[in-house]
Amino acid sequence: MEFNINNICCIGAGFVGGPTMAVIADNCPGIQINVVDINTERIKRWNDEDLSKLPIYEKGLESIIKKCRGKNLHFSNKIEENLKVADMIFISVNTPTKIKGLGAGKASDLKWIEASTRQIAKNAKDNVIVVEKSTLPVRTADTVKKILNSQSEKNSRINYKRNFYVLSNPEFLAEGTAIENLQNPDRVLIGGDNEEAINALRKIYKKWIDNKKILQTNLWSSELSKLTANAFLAQRISSINSLTALCESTGADIKEVVMAIGMDTRIGSRFLEPGPGFGGSCFKKDILNLIYICDYYGLKEVSSYWQKVLELNSWQKSRISNLIVDKLFGTLSGKKICILGFAFKANTNDTRESPAIDICNSLLEEGANLSIYDPRVSLKQIAKDLNEDNTIDAKIGLDTGKWTYEESIFSAANEADAIVILTEWNEFKNMDWKKISIIMRRPSWVFDTRLISDLEDNNLFGINIWKIGYGI
Ligand code: NAD
Ligand code: UGA
Image (cartoon, rainbow, N blue to C red; front, side, top):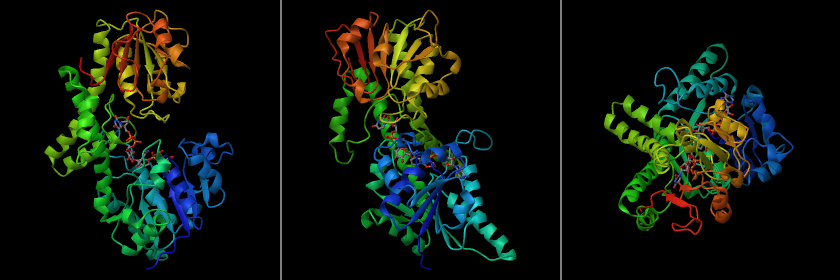
């Protein structure tokens, strides 16, 4: 069977679906691409004339949208209509952790995958290639195939039988560098059991990616590799974060340790930045998913091994809030703490699973007044992430356990007892310490959980500094 791909439909216009389809459209002008979503507000924003209103900010995305939108890239809520004409369909919907029912708290909630698959089964034409782009538990392709084939059999009794070809093609992009990652990926992974279908997808990627970087595996290896990649990345962070604590106790310096081990080419230097713990929408959910699958197959030792990566991550957050309390004489009641950075990493306004959420909540519980500044995260988002009842828009007064949203570093630091740097934004690297030391209360503390501040230990400004993984 030879496939001719002239029309692609992608279900899900989110962080992955939008940028991925934009990059395909840019590199394959001969293919018409329709990105569809049930979320009308999101689609409206993808179609906004004002490109600053796009639902996602990624460097390089605006210029691709400007070039391709309305030509071979279209965003719409017309799901059925676009499924009917597609030669290839990507499923790029959300797969969060289940919050209730069997497997709650661990297993992936596949209800959006199932709904999309049923829509495909109902509307797609014959010989369509269905590509799993979402991150999925290993063996989900089985379920997808079953749903597609059962509808196909039902149709065959009434009408005609259709063939579907299922591929797994997980996405490895990181937020903030999505376009760069899509344009020049380390590898593209295609899992499947039909050579022609795999080649049809390969042909698309080959338009801009070296064929040697396009890996072919069976379906299950592809699905599992995505979970494994995220688990390994997260494990590196937990490993280095576990050693920050040991450095602090022994006088070793984590930066020097990272340099020393990173020069070993077997270990490599990337993804060894110590910090307040990993956040983001996927690491935790994907490891929980891996844990659930291991338990399902009775592999208790394997699941508890990965469980530790998550436990260490939680511990890192709580040890940071505990030591802030400790350094500030055991009480935060009535004290003002300035929080610099709320996003889960720099260059994004995404706060999903941000370590700032847990750390701020612990400090609030201790009675601190937080003044929060992040260059990209909105007041609305912070209010959603923290308890909205804690918001006060008046100046910090005698009330305890409240927070305010600030528009600048200086208004956040004014009268503060401590500054806590939680996100590695560039503007936190070189701050005007002289000015800050004047406006802070004494004794003043800076807690640098990202190791980015240029404030020296014995600084002239009389500010006490604590740096993660830095032994004293
Ligand atoms: P997202 O929440 O930003 O977008 C998913 C979109 O799918 C939403 O807009 C939602 O409305 C839409 N949707 C859900 N069900 C639908 C249906 N039946 N019909 C039409 N639209 C529907 O999610 P995301 O961040 O793009 O992630 C998608 C998948 O990719 C997840 O499995 C995630 O784990 C994986 N992933 C995410 C990233 C990342 O950086 N965010 C990176 C790699 C992989
Ligand atoms: C991550 C992976 O890097 C992507 O390959 C994957 O596709 C994606 O998850 C996904 O499946 O969703 P992302 O969550 O966007 O991407 O961001 P990362 O850059 O990986 O950072 C994740 C978290 O780890 C952040 O909180 C970051 O601050 C932290 N981190 C990262 C560190 O603490 N130290 C490091 O050295 C690197």
